[in-house]
Image (cartoon, rainbow, N blue to C red; front, side, top):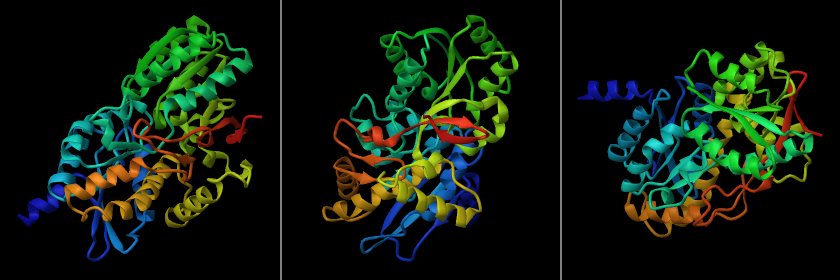
Length: 381
């Protein structure tokens, strides 16, 4: 039996971060391996920076790697709920993975803090999604900033290419009506898989449509391939990316071919340029310094989504503890209710204000318009 438990833990890449006599149990599911690893690695690496004490309670984190596989995400979530009796779960890393676990989260009544890009995990609000709280910026918040910049730049036509999963599909659903309202015509609409090694066919269709600009809607390393393929085919128009491209590896993998790219994303990318009056600047700097001290490298913004989940729990857990004991349905329900009442909580990337209808809570303070210049990030001036 012992060997079986050890083998099971190894299969999911289990990492335990514990304190003695832990009273609150938090599960963490990330994609530290597989196609979404560039997103999942900084998330897994952030777990040791989460609070190990909240009030007079100690906290235990049980972290599992789903290998970027939605089926493995479901298995991991079931394991955390049935075997570990967790009070909340942070994760999974990918949008398809988060969508896959919604039924199990809701039926168990366990709050999920989802560090994913797609707003489909919280919208439209229903009985399942009321258990989910999203830590990154919603797609529409990012899309409005990009549309505004496109109009300012005189963009009239756009080619769209996104991942053929909830991330890309939701982005198209959000972006296309906004573009139409702004008088911007989408002249090409393509999809690809995160694991694809080539998008030549899709890129040729976009290139032949001759759009003024191209929007790539893809998370992590997948955001690079469509852009460099189009550049290699000779496309000279403006590139836009979503906040899914907000990671150091976008610059490393893309090199000169991503120069001039415009995206809307976290202030973490351009922290030295952010005014000291920004409420998130100090906290973001502290997170970056702590991560760099522990791992010897700066974190991608995806890691900050896990850190902010810890901040949300830090505020909500004491409120829930006043109504129930950790490990009980009463506590988990009270924790969900407390998260929903979050007001003006400063995170690393913005300020959270949750309501029964809004389980993301970021406003314009949660984004910056950023471009790639000389191999680095800088604010669009």
